[in-house]
Length: 447
Image (cartoon, rainbow, N blue to C red; front, side):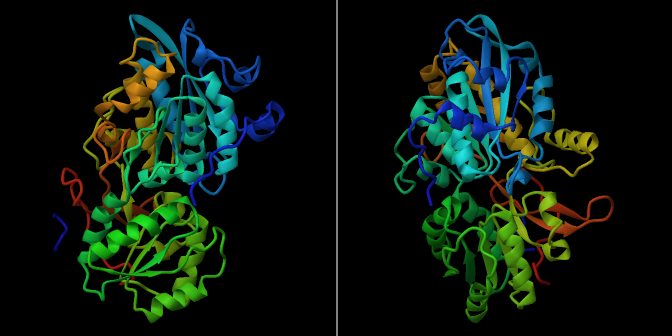
């Protein structure tokens, strides 16, 4: 088979009052280790992050445990249990000849950008580092708040362009270095290099129907990915900057049908894609190949669509097929995925790898400083992280923008499976990462 082997998040406003913060934080934050969020809420906002004598390194972790983006965080509690069991996190980090206990405070963004910024504002002064994950709706307001208040921060599972623009940088000229904020994932160029080889496999009119909402990801794709689509020799049919939560896509679907768009691209919120794809099937829009972003990344996302999910393609940044091992424990990607399935009874999710890597990165950065409470030193160390772990090689100094590490994604399709799980994500294109074996044929989405 040919080619098989081969709107910006707003910056938080003025300092949020304590009463407003507590209303926003609610009961969704929990602590892993000593201290905890309730302890962090007491006694003002001066904490270990500003104390050079504390024997504890405090790490905040902000993730969408609830709300429409909760699928991204479905493996996070499992990862935290694995991280806590590693020698480094169980016994403490050795920094500058001293061993520091490590405390992790977890906060739920509830998939709400406002709340994400609020919990970052509350946690920031109490921790030495904030880790955050899962789409611009969480990562962007967290990063913006951290940059404003001077808290070292690492983000993941967000296109780097969306993250960069959320910090008021220009992804078209990414020379600005943010003092406290870094991230790892991939960007629009990697989407191009992941998706276009799959498009090229099929004989089409080379017309791509694009469904990009009026939000941080959608605007990044419209402004950055559509030019890459055109540069790849394809014609763009943009369905328009629709509002998140739109319930009727008839006009957009009719437009795609009239233009004979045999290729499909999107980056919506998961519930919106379910609505669109169901209506597309009902109205006879059946592209030869659908390559989706931000949706159908996890097994739970397939439930609502049932058979309609078969052979939809997406990107995979981590899975049991990756030939990588943990820098903390030596566990392989395959063993980590199997452990998740055996301990939870659920099918593995690729966000396990990226969340795990956040804590690897934290260990790498703290291990290279003399004072873990010196925020400038920790932030500078983050910008220079260069190591190999559960997500493969990550080099924060060698990416497309300062402080950006790149993961090389794979092209995957959801395939009918026998056994406990009805659908399985299988590698169908390894153009960006030939070290991973192709597992299945690349088939038309609507055969």
